[in-house]
Length: 474
Image (cartoon, rainbow, N blue to C red):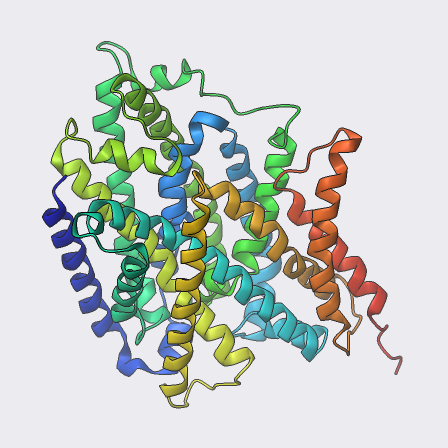
């Protein structure tokens, strides 16, 4: 393994991102950081959001997940498309009508200040966990490909990765990220395509087509009845995860809200949903090739380490290892930089009341604070040593995003108000009730999968109704 090559690639890639960051920062103003002046091209945003939506977790975990779950993940992806349509035609019109910077300010307009703060707080918790999990993946690979050779401990590697991300994104925020996401998505798709070509040719016999090989594999199945991955659970889970983790997530919506018009933002979401079907099919196809290649060549790797071990093995061309490494950096950086920007935006706008024209000093302190929090959570994940982190990430999302789903549904479907902090209690209790339901359901012959998010949201909705007040009559 050429440690010097990987280190050179890392530094060169970050240098390119720094140049882009300096060109797009526009003086580092809050307006550029928060909304990019609301003047981004929708097609550019849509292409960049592919990388942000997939992240390093998808890039690494989905191919590694194929051995144990086949293609059942594709049913979730079909559910994503339904969820993106809901975002496009239900949520985006609301956000554009209210001209929000933080999407949680809508909860304040409809329900009250307490709901606004509660929604934003649950986003902060959700995104810190999600961003840490996604960044953990790339840090783990940097550790294996570079830092282990120099006996650098994981916590130091994690600090270095976070600092490198901050170097190019801390000043420009979302204005920089809209541009860098485009570069990062391109590299990630290039890495996937090259891996499919080289690994596919290594395992497919001469005269047999790649698709024929995939279709004949025992890992090629969509439906797994009688488990938490039953088809309807996967579709419902994918739909609710898309609505919650994209439509109710400041990180993803902050990109959408940089688009000049509502129509452009809607086209962005629909194109993203369609594109992700094809992109994830590539990842799952690659997973079949990687699993078979590892078995044929005695590579003892599985889960999140499978792609890395095969791509950087001595039997593969060096170009594959290099492009894989760049693709991984691209996927993870694309997710982590926007997460830091959205966390900073939500906290500054929702809790500090920072305006677009104010000084950036306070914003920079908040940015550093979230870097430290993400570092601590990454170290915690490292201690858990999960083999495949994507399933854990979706399960965690079911608990943390559920209250957001319930509160936004309540705001959209009713005219009632919640004028006290009982809403925070409801949002805290609902995930515990959902967890209790997940433990009790198997006794009835029903195993809850990723659709847990819907049950959590429904509990929050009911709780919000019980503590709310009807609008006063004129």
